[in-house]
Amino acid sequence: MSKKENINFIELKKYPGIRFIIQHGRLGSRIFLFGLISAALIVILHNFFVYKLKDYIWSALMSVPVTLICMGVFSVLYEWYVRSTFIDAMRSVNAAWNTGVTVFPTHKSAPDRIEVLKKASKSVKLMSTTFSRYFLSVGGLVEEKIEKGIRFYFIIYHPESNAIEEKAFEENAVIADFQDEIKSTCRRHLAPLVKKHPDMVFVKFCKFNTPFGITIVDDVNMVLSLNIYGLSRSKNETPCLIIENKYDRENVFKLYESSFNAIWEKLDDTIPESLAYIFKEEVNEKV
Image (tube, rainbow, N blue to C red; front, side, top):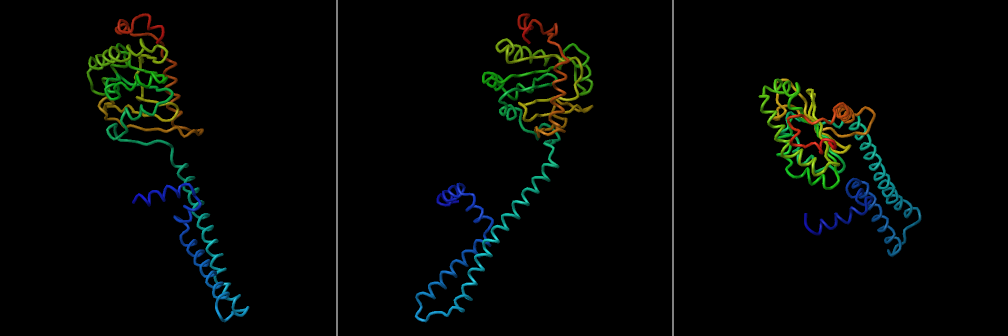
């Protein structure tokens, strides 16, 4: 597209009616213009030609362009009606079938964690086993978001609970590896964030194996990773679901958001003994 054509297109965006006629009402607009040109020629012929046309000939000739003009206007209006009706029908069908859920076989084909986090503007709720790969992916963006007034709620596995044993058994992993990752995440990321931003970052430790890992961004969308026996969430082997909030009564987004909130309310603020020295006592009361 040339610079001139680009400017013309931008100008047309200011006039949706003209843009519609050019893009969608081409046949009707051409008929309309042909009728106007025909009418103009007949008027010129009648007024400037030496031989004056008789009234009945004049009327007969003028009926042709008038008919064309009427056909052009009707065609444009009909085209607009058909297209608008079709668009509304397709939107209705899409709304009926689109539940807001996009399924990816694994996290490898899903949006990157950092791209998801960039969309946050109010709060972020997260639940995972160790969060070791999460902080590697998002880098310092978590703290940048916190400094912009965004609250973070983390649910991480209790390192000495049955949950970590069940998770390791489920994913055919070593329990000690998960425990070391949790301790590392708390020491390097969670504890420093809680100490620095006690009113913005909240951490709870889960003692039971959760059915999914989740990241909820505001009240808009979420990334959900399901637990499947024999497959590892930590190795991106389980399906990943991107769920949008459709704001309707039977909402998949609300279903999982309510589940996260229920788990959050069920957990207390107790810091595991093995991690107490990392968070320190004065921070425990604010977590």
